[in-house]
Length: 239
Ligand code: IPE
Ligand code: IPE
Ligand code: MG
Image (tube, rainbow, N blue to C red; front, top):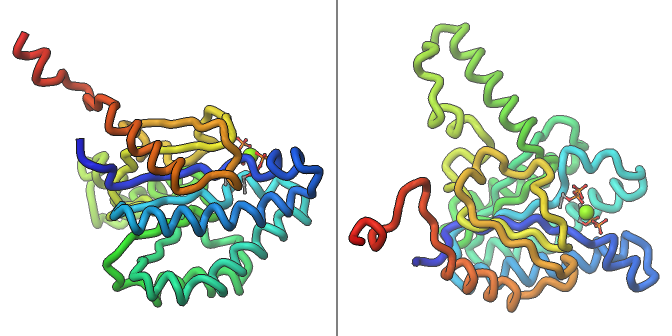
């Protein structure tokens, strides 16, 4: 089987990583940033075309205000410090998630990252920020309804492809492999529509401990999986 074209990661366990060390949760998020940098570099080197990282969910606003502000601060730090290098490395940055509700300076930085790197041809780094699948699907449905009401399309045009094309991930292939760290086995509102035929891997390690070796191992395991997409494999047909 060929390498996955698109790997998506739910970066989870920063808080527990910090707690295990008697550190504040913020220290876990900061350490998580190093894992994120390492993973982007590794995916680029491995020639993975698309890497999606779940950085902040639409439900993460329910955390204490100080933690939300730490996470916003880290996003700003990441873009300010790393954008130039990502651009040099030919990385194309895409952001998915709801822009409304984000502070103006953050929106500006997200736009800057996408505009500066928009024509790059290396790794596409998709950052899911203020992202929730239900919100994304709801926005897509609202757009379709508006198009039907305006007479631009008819009800018959509301196909699975039409829905996919109106999601934030339009033009991005569905993830072949979804990895979640920290031992939790759930999607937490991540890529619900796009994950229809993804392979899942749940790793026990906390996100700040995730390194390129984990990524390489996950890809190795991916090669051993048999993907059927609802069909039967050729060997079974031959029997
Ligand atoms: C992942 O780590 C980071 C975000 C969700 C932003 P957590 O902060 O969820 O860490 P745990 O799950 O509490 O350990
Ligand atoms: C999912 O992790 C969101 C991100 C990794 C950004 P959470 O820690 O928010 O998910 P739950 O609350 O454990 O489901
Ligand atoms: Mg968590």
